Amino acid sequence: MKTKPTQRPTLPQTVLLLASSVLLLALAAHNVNAATQKIPRLANGKPDFSGIWQTTSAADYDLEPHSNRKDAPPSAGVVEGFYLPYLPKALEQKQKNFAERDKLDPALKGYTLGVPRGIYYPEPFQIFQRKQDLTLVHQFGHSVRTIHTDGTGHPKDPYDWWLGDSRAHWEGDSLVVDVKHFNDKTWFDRAGNFHSDALHVVETWTFLDPNTIEYKAHIEDPNVFSKPWDLSVMLYRHREKNFQLIEDYRFTLDYDEHYPPKPDGK
Amino acid sequence: MKYSLPNRPLGRAGLVVLSLLTTHAATAEDAKPTENAAAQPTGAAPAAAPRQPRPLKLGGPGIDQERSFKPISSGKWTGPRLADGQPAVQGHWSNTIANHNNFTDPQGGIINDPNPNRVAKGPREERAPSRVSDPADGQVPFQPWALAKVKDFQAHFHDPVQPQYIEPLARCAPAGIPKSLYWHGYQISQYPGYVLFQFNSGTRIIHLDGKPHLPDNIKLWNGDSRGHWEGNTLVVDVTNQNGKALFGRSGEFISENGHIEERYIFSNEERDRYIYQATLTDPTVYTRPFTVTVPARRWSAKDQPNGWHFEVEPANYLGKDTLKEPILDHYERVCAENNGGFGLVAEESAKK
Image (cartoon, rainbow over all chains, first blue to last red):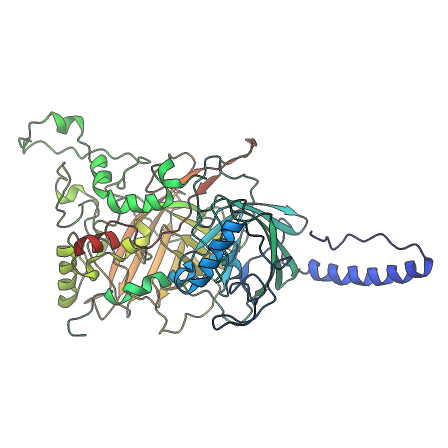
């Protein structure tokens, strides 16, 4: 699964190969170390993901491989093994969702996108990080998610949440987040890929360099899928001058015209 | 898999609905007669005897806990600081005098309420002062046209026959400024370059990073906020407002042309107190700038969580009880649109 940059593979037997491999590996390790040593860190030495991030992937259009469509650019997909392992009944539901995606996609209402969709939806989100937690503020729907890194566990008597309950720990320089206790109101993408409230997500966040995060999500939902599956996208740091989040409560647009009061006749 | 609402009386969505729907219940609870008052024959309170204000318990469940508060002056900060030098003020905060029912008479209940409290509220001077601290009459210096709009809203709040009489908050719009500071409790978190407010409906990122304001044709529910610390005071300049968030169920408002200068003055004497002071300027709506004052205090693990000021629950420590400070999880702050009795529900029932 996760590769540790400092871990070196067993060296081959032959002396010649050994020598050249050592040289190559040393160079590679040097490069990786140079990249990871430069990543921003909190005072406690943990990687600091603070910043504004966004994907350039087409994941939100459709996680699976797809040709171009009127409503989507083509993409080879972001799922390991390419296709989601739907149970037969769930596949029928997905196909219904797909057929009516221009009406049923929860994102069209501007609602909270859930996990992991909010991460690879093509709008920026900002991470605010302290020792005890990361707070993710999404521009879209302006939803807010807290990932706890204080050693606490999932609540014993939980609600079902739009964004689930996120508890994390560090594995080396990777942040591993266990997310569960979801509701079933969100989708994975605009193509109608969906989940039930039994969704369980394990995210892995790893810096590839100071401005790139490799984001992986391991997805389980026994009500919908025959086996777990994995997706992976890259997140890039916004570095434009004066870039900032701009609040986006688009679900208020439908009644926007009624406020504020204006002088009569205007 | 269980859903929140059937299992608990206060699911996240339920809390929002509850707070929109049960103001009467909450204020009535808070207004239970004292023993003295109950012992008095109805309508025969002796005029000469000083009236006993109903007791307010700090940390109790009610929305109003104080009738008066001490001023806090701007000056040096002598308390703890974060690594980046900011005064350390993180935590769960809430106002102490009331909610958004009534802007200028915070403990006076909803204006034109068809179901007013069973218990008389007593004279105005026994209730918390107006949130308008300047001018001295406690009233917003509205231009005549704007005052007429406010009165019109107050007349129709309980009978929202037009969409503009439905409070935007009931449709899960952000409460805006200043209402976010006295609706429910909220969390303040601090980071190098930022102060983050997580309200019950909406989030505010206060930039301390020196970036310029957004271009002025971008209009936002919570405006665009640039702040800096002056000793014990967080000074925030707010522009780019869309003017759509009302200040309360009493309908006061600002326009897109408004400008708000906020001062969050944190106490050195009582570390868990601050006073919010905002100067609102708007030549479209007001005749002069005016000042809003809201007292706030920080809630902690010593307080009982409740559905108003302190919506948290103890974290799951996984058997590790050696932590020095109890940790509190706040509830998810997601409001699904139109889930309140004053929103789509009222609109649809009006059609029937």
